[in-house]
Amino acid sequence: MRIATTNPATGEVLKSYEPMSTEQLEAAIERADLAFRDLHRTTVAQRGRWLGAAADLLDAERDDTARLMTTEMGKTYAAAQAEVTKCASACRFYAAHAERMLADEPADARAVNATRAFVRYQPIGPVLAVMPWNFPLWQVMRFAAPALMAGNTGLLKHASNVPQTALYLEDLFRRAGFVEGAFTTLLVGSDAVDRILSDPRVRAATLTGSERAGRSIAQIAGRELKKTVLELGGSDPFVVMPSADLDRAAEVATTARCQNNGQSCIAAKRFIVHTDVFDAFAEKFAANMAALRVGDPMDAGTDVGPLASSGGRDEVHAQVRDAVDHGATVLCGGEKPAGDGWFYPPTVVTDLTPQMRMWTEEVFGPVAGLYRVSSYAEAIEVANGTAFGLGSNAWTTDPDEQERFATDLDAGSVFVNGMTTSFPELPFGGVKNSGYGRELSALGMREFCNTKTVWVGRGEASAGAGAHAE
Image (cartoon, rainbow, N blue to C red; front, side):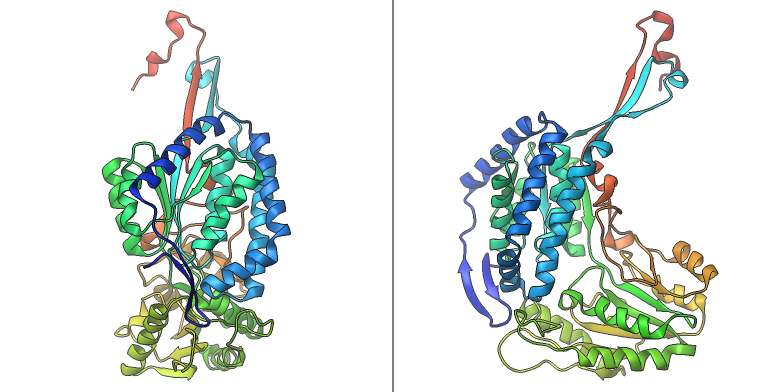
């Protein structure tokens, strides 16, 4: 993919960039390494002031930054504004709480024959972040804010269709006061990732993207013995049981499926509905989806903008046509519109069977699959019956079912009677083919820290740690 801004609403190429040369890439990695030597010696309080300044800049520049994201990848302007605000909030969260998260954790010194024993969290160095286009600011920030606060430096290889947002991020942290090289955008293609991650100065990598990309990163990192955190998408279940508030469930289902024009890893994609309420829910849900307005993402009245690429729209439509060819029923949408831009209508497909691609595949667009089940056990079987395990939703007012869903859904998160989302306060990540490791919360900050054991003895021959040596 060329490194360029192409407006998804028109297909017009607005700005193109030449990839970095080998010499430019080498210089960028060297700057990140040198910056780490300075940054990790600064105090948490100082880094917090810089991150707070970044939050202030995000708030001040919200509208222009949102307009840039909408132009590059097609999300509605309102959604882009909300994304900028969320990033500013995350910066302030880590600025306020990092000192506690990174504080030494005391251990029972007497139990280990020490005068003092504790765990210390220390940064490890430059971290490569390979990021996607769908939340071009937020998905970077949920890595960058905790990583910089911990004292690491960041090397961003962003998606090739959001280069201006990527460059904005580098400029943001520089203007906020972070040392030169603390966060660097690398305008390179995916073919440069092996070279970057193989460099001994680069200590780890985080990736949000496809399974294929995740396997590639993991293979390189395994060869180089480097830590990785991977978030590889999902096909999240949205389970509706008989006791659910159907009006509210159908309302949230519509938002959950079509948020970000349907291009969200944690968007609900498979709607698993108990047969006792299936017809009523399907009618409400399809009506809500059909009522959404598709159009210019800069228009305040637009609910769903274009998909980010022509190829992405073609893939979504191919999945829908495959289902129809194998006997599925389309309740609304399902036709690729003519005209400029890569628009696709909100679509609901039912009568799905395991022979259809939609049964287990992630559909990255505003397309919902409806699955009819006759029991709680069948709902769990269908919900867990994919290779993915990122987020999940369950709708029930039965306390026993709520507890069972929390345990039985095989996913990185379970949201009961609410839409799956991400918060700086809570860890975010998946299981199975949705990846491993966690972002956000204290766990996300510590993923790229050396969890160092410190043991201090009295210095007497009879009191050493050797009495319990490995």
